[in-house]
Image (cartoon, rainbow, N blue to C red; front, side, top):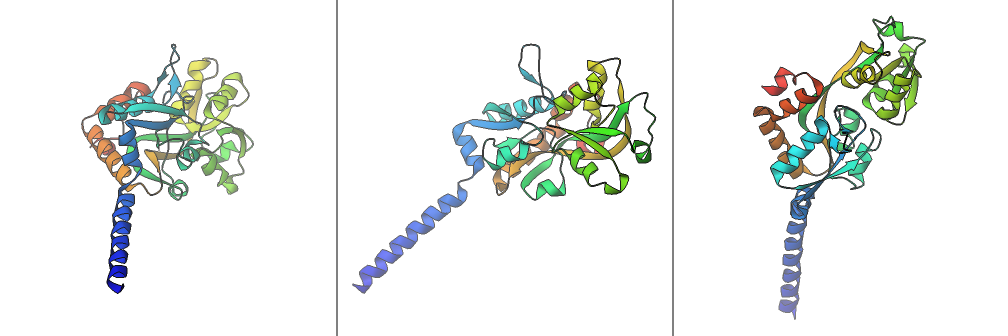
Length: 264
């Protein structure tokens, strides 16, 4: 009886080890490759990173980055449309596998998701109408600054308590830009690229960067605990920075090249 019990226990332990090993290797990267499809959260309302063309098809630098990734990995691509505020919840709740959507790397975000290495960069600024006199933070006191809720600009400016800034929050970049284009806002906190789009939409209201907030690295966001996926994404980014493809995409839509240190 003792031998039989020991044998049964050994068998059970073997099964636990076997199943445990299998579970340890089961991860999001495996799921993506088995499904032969990757779901990527991308905001389609922040030109030129994400937008819809005249035929209502997704385009932009983040869109083409996502398309290149899916093509290189031999996967079907499913875009999960998102806003600045919903990007991270999308991967946390498994609505999307990864985020490719002007996601800047910050310590606060790194607490709740993991980041790849940078694939692009973003200059974050306060931009105002060209006619507005503003050269530093003190000149922005008393002026209302439009900002998209949940963005790094929202976080950065909200933490500047000593500067006494007045913020007007909008749900996403599209509504913020509309406010600037229509005359509801004379200053915005956003990327330099998005600020330039305001004058394109309304040539009578040309905005220009007045104060630099910070230059951020843009990275791909992944839910916590997926090291295999992050490693594979890092390899892909390194390859496509080295061969120039990511720089070509960025230059095509933003008009400038990626920082030299990123390309070298």
